[in-house]
Image (cartoon, rainbow, N blue to C red):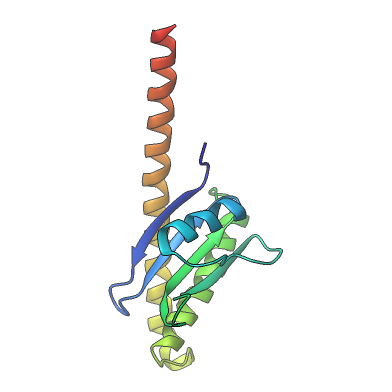
Length: 145
């Protein structure tokens, strides 16, 4: 069974799209390959990363992914998510020609808040869907036996 959770979030300011993934690195790389058509993106020994998608043929920028191996609402996992979102925000700002400095700190703060809030909202929604499917599957197995 697929244990990874993934979803897209579009940034309404810079108009970038990020594929968020939570789960096993190999499984998430398969999702990236299937959804985006890119080769392995998540590499190295880490518990999370922000990666850039480029077209395999032209090298043109397509978008980004943010992967974390595990997520729950503990302080360590929330701070890990915040760390990766900080990288995502910096990358997006640099791609748009905005140097992440003190002068742009309010933009950076709002973008960090946006990505973090959207991640938590979408993660909760996907997690609830998954639990509902599990409960339905368990009930149908009980009634058929």
